[in-house]
Length: 75
Image 1 (cartoon, rainbow, N blue to C red):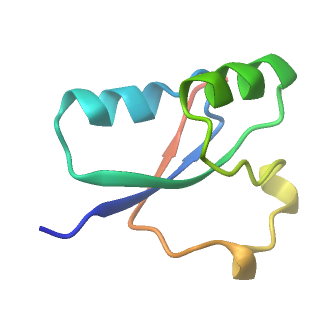
Image 2 (cartoon, helix red, strand yellow):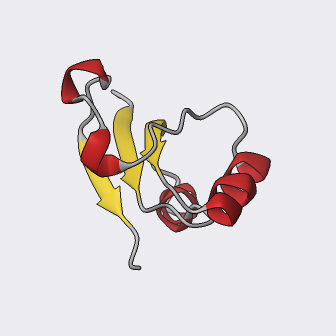
């Protein structure tokens, strides 16, 4: 089965990531977009190898890896 490639925006602590893990989905987070300092620190403690692309309004979409699912947390 193909891995679902996910981009997670406004991540907070990684709620979408944890939700997907609970479903036992075959997925990979290919990147995140987060600008809040403490949210970034917490996310990277939970998932240290995932790239933060920073401010979503400044991301060059041509530099993003392909993904199948876009998730976003509530502010």
